[in-house]
Length: 265
Image 1 (cartoon, rainbow, N blue to C red):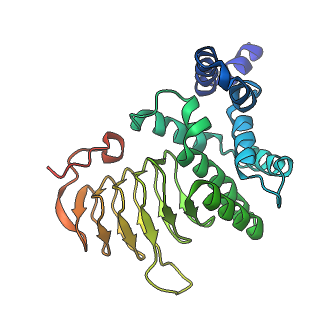
Image 2: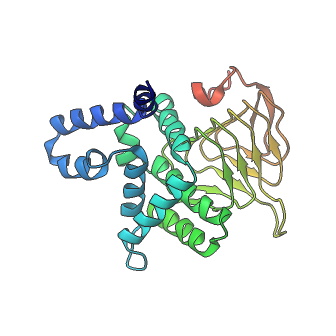
């Protein structure tokens, strides 16, 4: 009975499905065999695959892949980051119409890869290893074009579509199940050393090119239209648009970040 319980506890439906999809991808495109084997099929868990992929992407002459692999392995296991990674992975699969399998974010989508590397850097920051965390931030920016301060706090289920030119500042907080598109900035408005960046609630959808500036709150399940500049607090379940942004209506649905509906009608 105890053995059966242990076997059930070891079941990982996300990883099992990824393995099956990796086998299918290998059959369809044998030329990607080396990548698929080394990145997915060679590993026994999603956590191991993530640490390998992070190390491969961030390695440089200054920090070899093997050392980064050891750092990532240790952090991902000790901080139990697997639950966050699975939530991020499912968010991409469910919300991005260009994503057709669980293998694609891990292998090809820089938004997903950058967030997983950030999570390692954030754990290092919280552990007092700030210089190493800054190294992760620097390499993530260089490799993926996404600049996230390692002190920023980001919840589960983040989906960044296209993931180009994202900036998230030091004291920013992003809730669970948030979606944002490319060129979003969560920035400050001054040089003070205290809270100076936005606090984004759960379920928020932030459109492409939107800038949210200052220590302001964006309420849960709200929408920020593309190209908007948000300088004041946004109530929950509202849509804001414009420069500067103003409330233009309700959010339009219960979960804007999941429906990804950006039309202001």
